[in-house]
Image (tube, one colour):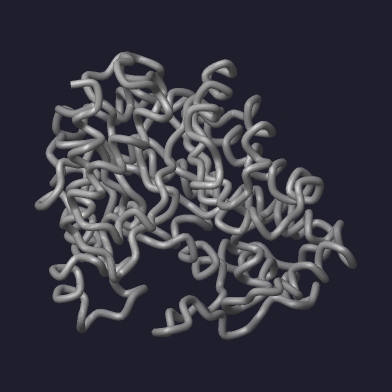
Length: 389
């Protein structure tokens, strides 16, 4: 199979006028530090609240026109260097036949928790039936699901349609980011079914049925990879994988149950799309940084627990970059204080009169919260862009 060329896909869209994020990931010079933030399209924006007041959460993701509108909203306020498609990491479990609700005050809730092996085997059987494959022995089901993953991810066509529409309407103002959750993170959500502080069920899984957990994670990795490949074909210009539950595992277990599948996702994607930039976010897992120095990912997005300057130097030596990692709590300061803190944060990391750092994208260490002031994000973006001027 011939590799997919991003340059060929680019021909179908308006020319890119702001390529700072892509240049930063490639290690090329930029005229200012590029910046975007997680959840930049979200409830902290009054216009988001107004537009979505009569729209259920997943219905927003499933309507390309709505998803496009929400993705573009922050560009009306801020001079951002990337957009990220409005969607959710849990659209994959939904596409696999799991029922997920977004409950106000609780977050995502799975109607049925994944607690037994037979539940997963039934999911595999139903997925195979969807593509016309029946009577497969249980031991071979996972292999068959993996083989049919490119067909199965067509259930997420609404995401691809939203990406194509959004990139067209962005009109080259900035690159568009596609994303997915990591296999481990999706497994945690499905096992726990709702927000938890103890992670009891997923812990039972890995210590009592480790081989079966690897089976599940392998299937999820192939599905995630094919989902990302379809996003590229639809117009995504770079990708981010969110390992939002990386912190659930100690380092040894993260190396066993998350890292191999993160690597598998990136390898599959890069085999088909060699020039697509990929970012990995191992949330609240500072130990993961060194383990990712030889991964297929081009950049690691770090949280505020890590020193930005040291992390950047470590990854530069490995030929990779860093994204992050200012504490989102900074957004609760007045705008002028945010501006000062952001400037100080860059000086601490890179020096006062240093050139603009290569392989660096500014971001918060986590996403915007609903009670944050949009003016504070504006101050943050302006301060980042002012560094080195």
